[in-house]
Length: 119
Image 1 (cartoon, rainbow, N blue to C red):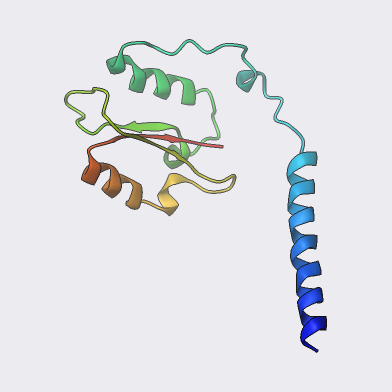
Image 2 (cartoon, rainbow, N blue to C red; image 1 turned 90 degrees about the horizontal axis):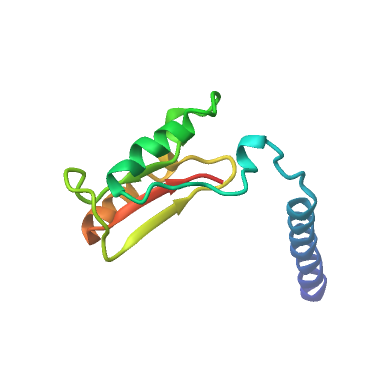
């Protein structure tokens, strides 16, 4: 009885894993011309990053405000590099609000900038 349960459980787990790998591999790539640009000119001045990001994200009309890319500066008054920076990449159907304020609290505790991006 235990052997049957073990092998059926193993078969189920392997089947699910195979399905997930197959659906992720076979999924259709996004061919939106806005996303296929060969090179992106990112501003070199830190003070220009937030406005640049807002302008780039405004091109996506159906994008909800809480799902847009965002930089959370450790010190918003003096935007500067920090020793540690966090990058938060949420899942396909998620947004940063699902885990908020955990990332923000962690960044505040360690004095880090956070870049919230999306998949």
